[in-house]
Length: 506
Image 1 (cartoon, one colour):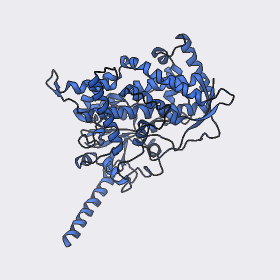
Image 2 (cartoon, rainbow, N blue to C red):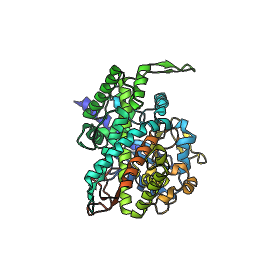
Image 3 (tube, one colour):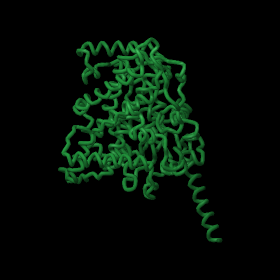
Image 4 (cartoon, rainbow, N blue to C red):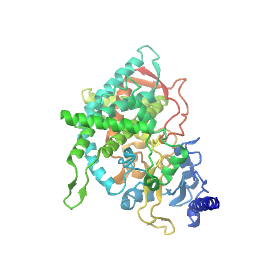
């Protein structure tokens, strides 16, 4: 009994020492930091009553004018350098990328294979996977997938015509769910070769599983915080993060799809086909002698998993927020519609790969939406070696430290974007973009670890919005939330409830 008491006292003392050293780390080095909470760190309100965007933006604004290249920050128990200086952010993302190539997030390929996707992977395995997946998202592959996306978008328009009567006044529609159903069908077809038909049958497993990933936790808040704060230890302890039903659904889907294609010798120029080729190729040796390992089914499933999640959620949310803003700014909406129709007239009235690329003002509107509604609020990197900030010898980012680049806060910095809370697509005219540093706009990241599927996401977003704006007018109604109410339990920017607008046929 006495031994047990001593053991509990010893463990309590170690925990107390860890919390003390972790919460005083930056202060002891002369780096400014708000006093961290013993459990939440500087993320007070996380998953309770504040969205991550607001937490980080408030912190950024507090120190924005103080002249520090970075300040201290505790993301729960993960000690972090919070970058204030845009030049330092550029160094981390691009110039000194070799020292910040890892993200340092949780993944456990042995027990939780779906976490071993490109977004999470670090080290040589990330580099290998990036090189293998990049060819899937070239302009040539986008052109090949284009007709598939067009086919889904035409069905989307048909569904909208059924929802919106021809009579005056149109109909009040909930756009968030509609956009998610559209992008789910696009990704299901392009990634799996499966006709999901979510547009007409919303209650599909595809849709349900996709929704759960961003809000549901496998564990409670305490264990999830442990996995986020100590990813390597959590992996060593064989912890998992993906809920069982989500894991089983995607693993079964990938296994069955691959087995069917291999048996029937079905060839499609899509994401799944490339993964099958990787599996069949096995291990091989490069000219420099490096051995590239073959991919196991779990690794392949992880890449499909992240392609699906990133493709449906980010694009559907962007489209929803874009229509929400255009409903409030009908003058901008009219200008976009005029631009779309003008371009289509120059391309025989057809929505083609070239005509979509030529819709410059639509692209400006989407870029401004991504600035104002940044889906993923921050970029994360990890220092592989001690890093002395150029010109600031006192400011050292120690090896193993997380680096937070608060993209959503940069996007609302009045020094970069005057009157930042106003929706103004002119910020992304060719002239203004040319005069702006690339790291001042980071919805897709920057540098070698930018979003590999950026072209695909932009393509389906442009197609979906062009088809809708061409055929329908959108305006606010009594059910439109002004402003929107966001869900603090979502890891990305998501609303509580739907986004309602009035739609009328053009």
